Image (cartoon, rainbow, N blue to C red; front, side, top):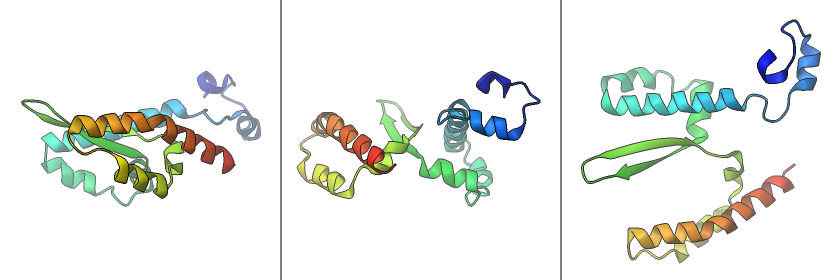
Length: 137
């Protein structure tokens, strides 16, 4: 605690609460996402551990990481790897209308066309999400 907030260990709780900022626990949260990612990648190569991980599916922490993580499959000539990553909180503000419009407009001629369409849409997606996030406060 004293490293993150620059407060002595004996600090009263009310002073700690006043010292907290929006990003006070960001490093702990990111470490949690790293652990979540590692566990999910391990169960893909150690299938018997999938059952062990399933025991946690109803736990609050697991629901948090499932709801706030995304994943993609990266395929190479010899392998397919699933990568997990944290979703930024502002991602929840991308509207269904924008998602549907993108799906209707994106060229599907090839994977490259789809990726180029996605990359081209990113600036407007970010603008919409940031605007709606600000409006929600």
